[in-house]
Length: 271
Ligand code: KIV
Picture 1 (cartoon, rainbow, N blue to C red):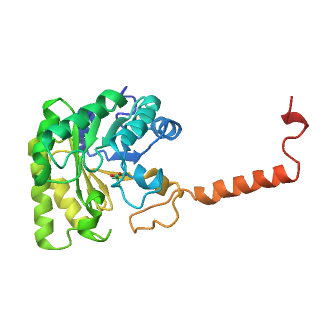
Picture 2: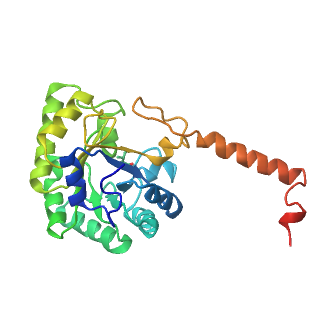
Picture 3: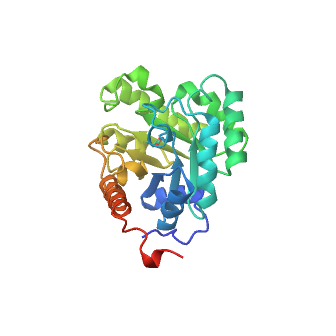
């Protein structure tokens, strides 16, 4: 049970207070009105309109193709449904890497057109000027370190990051930098649990893990993975709470049978 369950709206200040008070932060993705309504009603602290929409909603192999307009479309639908959660939207690939002005423009479009509460960017030192620029407009920024899917072609695989000392040291430095620049939180993806603990202890802002172990300040999952809608994606860190793929398939098969058997609609189901 959250100490902040009756908060009218989760804020960055509440997220920080959760970390300070040792309350773990819950975060999930959502990309549409109906799902966001359920997730918010259940009491999630942060809803991430992730660029994983590129995979689970649009069927792309990577997160790279999704556009700013498409992210705004998803974010607008989510924000309409949400009452309590803090809504963060991913800045899509290509909108913040080239210049800080462009990054600010993209972030402003997201905030203005969707009504979201903050944005998330992947990377550390190399994008610090973009983060600084976005923060000048009063837009809360969340960082994302470790496995950063927008850089998949640089990494080559989706395996665990920062196992080597050099990459781990850079990650800790990047986390400290993101805090210094003014990020309100950091997502840490697919790194050794030991390193997750070190990062969470090295900064005062909340660190939310996905495959970063239990000693971070909160956890995030892609909702389609948690619900078992995606089948092939089976990383060690994923806990599935439902097998919704099978449930939905079963329901659809049942419906098809009822239609074919002339059992649907029955007498009571028609005017
Ligand atoms: O896009 C996304 O869903 C994410 C999560 C994996 C953290 O960035």
